[in-house]
Image (cartoon, rainbow, N blue to C red; front, side, top):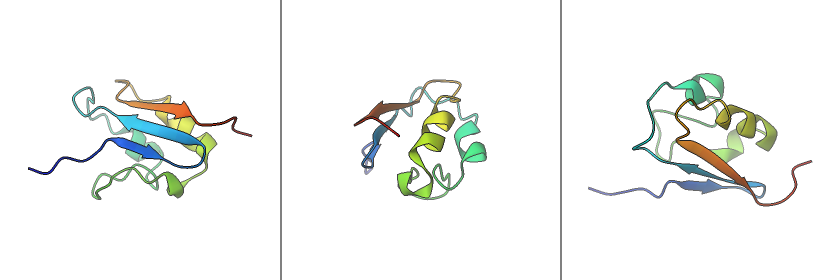
Length: 75
């Protein structure tokens, strides 16, 4: 079975996803479906929205499976 790297980045942030931690509440996909796409691999597309909106949605993750790290100061 092929495994996928669970790190996604753009110029501003790196997003990590821990599938074993995820409780599949789907808050990410329901809140920001242009970034968190449940039917496509890779399922996280950081080009789908502004960094600030992505960060705000990740902070709503109830399990903590999604995390982010800033690469630089976000304006």
